[in-house]
Every structure is written in structure tokens, then in C-alpha cells.
Image (cartoon, rainbow, N blue to C red):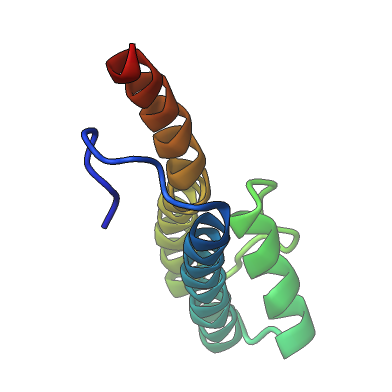
Length: 115
């Protein structure tokens, strides 16, 4: 997906396209995760969609749930969703940072090879 160390860094316009693709994948992952969380909170806890959205969004953002689960199924779902949300946070951070880090390291290697 990325250029090799022996090749020049890509042009700025191509880099913007790469970042747009990474952002779109990250946004899709977050949106899909919100839908999963909303469905789980609505199904297991009987929360309205707005409240389910709030709980799912707070977990995905790393803040924690607003409404404590009351049912056994809701507690298990909330625990599993919290673990999943932590992984999604790391994956999204990686998706958004990878092109910048790659470009930065690539420029260092490219500059070193030119001399």
C-alpha cells in the first residue's frame, strides 16, 4: 500500500487522497461500532436510541457508560463492548497516524539515501 524506502515520497495530492481513504475507513469503523453499541444497549437494556447512542459514544470515546447496566445480559454486553471499544480506539488511532508516521520516516530515509 505504501511506497518502498527506495522510492521517492508520494506527491502531496496523493498523500491527501491516502489520508482521505484512511479517514473514511476510520469513520466507517466508528459508525459501525456505534450502531453495534446502540443495538446492544437498546436490546439488552431497553434504552431509547438517544440514550443508547450516548452510552455507545461515551464508551467509544473512552469516557465510560452513562447508564449503569441493570440486567445480567446488559452487564455482559457492556463489558464486552467496553473491551471492543478500547480496541477500536487503538485501531482508529493507528489508521489516522500511520500515513503521517510513514511519510515522516520515509522522508528521513529518502534524505539519507540522497547524500
